[in-house]
Every structure is written in C-alpha cells, then in structure tokens.
Image 1 (cartoon, rainbow, N blue to C red):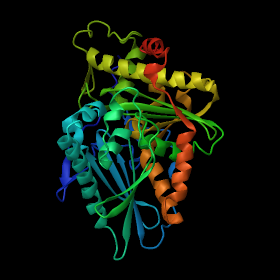
Image 2 (image 1 turned 180 degrees about the vertical axis):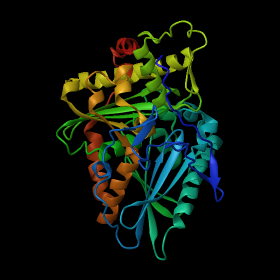
Image 3 (image 1 turned 30 degrees about the vertical axis):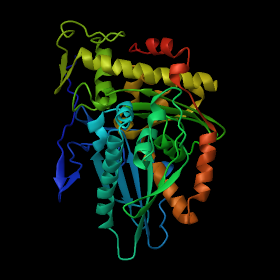
Length: 428
C-alpha cells in the first residue's frame, strides 16, 4: 500500500425535539437516501473531490410556485428507510424527515415480509407501522404550514412496500409466476392528507423505479439512459421514449454495509478498487498473504474476505443484469448516452471505482452521474403536475403509458444469466 488513508465517516442516531434527526459526520447523514440535499463532493485523501452530480433542474424541473394554499410533500418508502421532503411555496426544499422502516422487525428483505404477511395480524401491523411513520413526517410538516394551507402527498415505493401500505395481500408477489395484479397508480389518504401512489412495473420493479424513469425524462429523450438504483435490491432500466427494458436482482446487504457494519457500500467499493490497484486483491477476489485470513486494515476499516465476497456476489448479479439489458436492447455501452446512479448508494459511488471492480461494464463508468433520490425527484415532478392540473387524471394516463412501454425481465428465467453472473464475479 502507499500509506495513504481513505477517510470514512461514521455517526450515530440522534433526536431533535423528540424526533429522529439525521446526524452528520463529515458530509453524510446517518441515513443516506440520496435526497440531494448534501453537497456533491466527498473528501478523499484530505482533498475535495468533485462528484458528477446531475443538476437539480435536470431531475426536478425548474422551481415554480405551487397553487395558492397548496403545499407538496413527497415520500420514498424503501425496504430499509423512509425519506420524506416538504417543499416551500416556490418549490424549494424546506424540511425533511428520515426514518428507519419499522417493518424491519419482520425481516430485512421483502420476501421475509411477504411470508410474515401471511398472518393477517402481522400484515395489519406492518400497514400500521408504515402509516405511523408517514403520520409523524406529515405532523412535522404541518408545523411549517401557514394558516389556510393544505398538504398534498405523492409517494413512491417498491411493489411489496406499496402492497403493505395499501393493505393488499402480497402473497402473489412471493410465489411463481411472481405476478402483481395491483400495479396501477392509486389514491389514498394518510392522516387526512390526500396521497397519490406511483404505479409499479412488476412484482419486483416498483413505483420507486417508475418515479425514477419519470424523473430522468426517459419517456421524453431519444438518447438511451441507463438508470441504476442499488440498495437491498438492485433495479435497472435501459431505454428511451420509445421503449424501455427493466430488471431487478437481489443485492443483499452488500451495498448497505451489511458485512462491515457502519461502512457505506460506496466506500467499500472504493477500497476494493484501491486494493486491486495495489495488487493486494486479485481478480478472483482473494486477498494476498498475509491478509487472507485476518483481512487488511485501511484507515479505520478492516477489509475482510467476507466483505469482499459480499460485494463480489452483489456486483456480479448487477453487472450481469446490466449486460443482459444491453444485449436484449441490441446495443453496446457506446450507444448508451448517460448512466444515472440513483439513491443513497449512487450519490457517493465513485464511477471509476465501480468500473475498476467490474460493477459497471467498461465504457459506462465515464458516462455515470449521481442522480440522488430519483424516486423523490419523480414524486416532486408528479406532484407539480397533479396540483397544476387540479387532479391526477392526466398523470395517471401518462404513467400508464410508461408502464405499458416498459418490459420487465425476470433474470431467473434468462438462460444466460447464470453464466454472465459467474463471469462478472471477477474483479476486472
């Protein structure tokens, strides 16, 4: 090693006025959802390094006043975290509420929650849990309203989270052929606040990805965009205004620090790229001696073979999924115009590090930009349209067309997925 230290930032949960708050250490919140409110730079080796971050206007549109007396809130219900934003009269972000999804007591992944929901008591409890989180966020936001103002909420979530929120039985999502009978946009009410819920694309590609497509303008652009949203699951969409192909793959805890607790997955990828550069990690994922058994200490992080294996399995599945999308679309990396890295993971991922370990195929890393939380960005755009139109009818029709023109692949049914998966487990 060169002796240089790679800085990592850690922090603890805290409360403010009895509410959870995002405590920052360095430049990061304890729960990073990629909401885009943090600066787009990360200190590295003592220097400021600029990230390629999509301009706010590119994803959220130009700021414009909301109709008189109306205020907009948006929410992204993830398997692990819930993020909510409140916008001011002129479209500026004025408050946020971040929380851990309390449904994690029933399991860290969606399949565990589907199984738990087989018991009506557990299903009812999970619905109550997520509605309680939304209630707390809305109560906080109400304190920022002026007399006579009312709230409108737009919400995006993966398909299982949407089913649990709405009180629909998710059993069909967990068994072959993994169909989803409820994918249309929905309207509901949360604590007296009218709410529009984004439509899903399939049982395993949900409304959060539909919102990302909407935010990225994929239904309007001729050029090809690859949207990559990595978290507990990895969802990817490739396409343009004419057609799109999507897929999803399980990523497990690798990108969220599940093996090395407290270490962001983006940081772990940077560390592995560094070890590859130094020749300490070989292309098969083995650490050189004397680090094979005990791992290697870099700064305040120990990289173990278990951590390497976790990233290796996850990135192999994601890279294979991206390659299959390009193959089925009939294009190569050179024909993809831009890559949007969505969510908290993507917000701090160094594209060149992702390319160095093979997470992003060659030729795509240089086109990658952090998109922040594209689910929230899409919800904002949708909310603007709903309030301007005086209803969700036109938006619902537009999103129905988006769903219709997006084909979703089940990677488990793709014959070449297994061989591509094994190939992409190599670290370049």
